[in-house]
Length: 172
Image 1 (cartoon, rainbow, N blue to C red):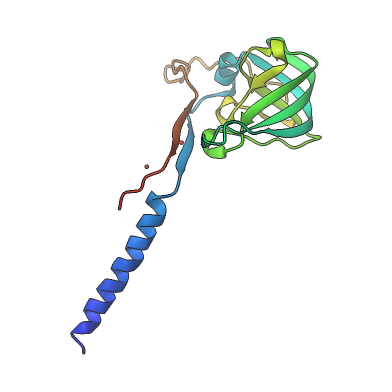
Image 2 (image 1 turned 180 degrees about the vertical axis):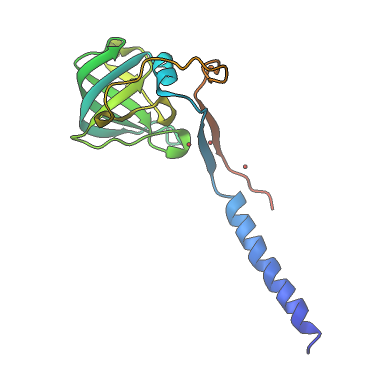
C-alpha cells in the first residue's frame, strides 16, 4: 500500500497539469504590446490630434466568422484641434478587445485623442498604443526628445499577436 502512494500522487499531479495545459493551449490568445515612446513621438506619428467629449458609444459588429474584428464607435464632439483636420463631430473607432490594442472611453468624459485615418468620412481610428488619454492631463506634448536612444525610428508603435487557437497537447 505504501508503494502505491507515490504513484497515486504522481498520477494526480499529471492529471492536474494536463488539464491546465489543455485549458491554456486551447483557448484563444492575443496580446497588445506597444513600443515604448514619448507623447511627442506619438504626436508625430498621429495624423490627427484633438480634444473632445465622448457623447455616445456604439458597437460595430463585423464578420461573425472573424475573431476580434468588432469595434467600438465613440461619437466625439471636437473641442480643440492640435494636428490634422477633423470635423466638429467625429466617430473614433477602436477594437473592442484590449488584446488587439482596443481602448474604452466613457460617455461624458473629455479625451485627448491621437488618431489615424482619412477623416473626410468623419471617422478616424485609435488604439491603446496611440496615446489617447484623458484631456485633464493638458494639451499634447509636441516635441520629441533629442536623445540618441529615442524610439522615433520605429515605424509602428503597436505590435499585435493575432488571435490564435491551438488544439495540440503562444499581443498591451
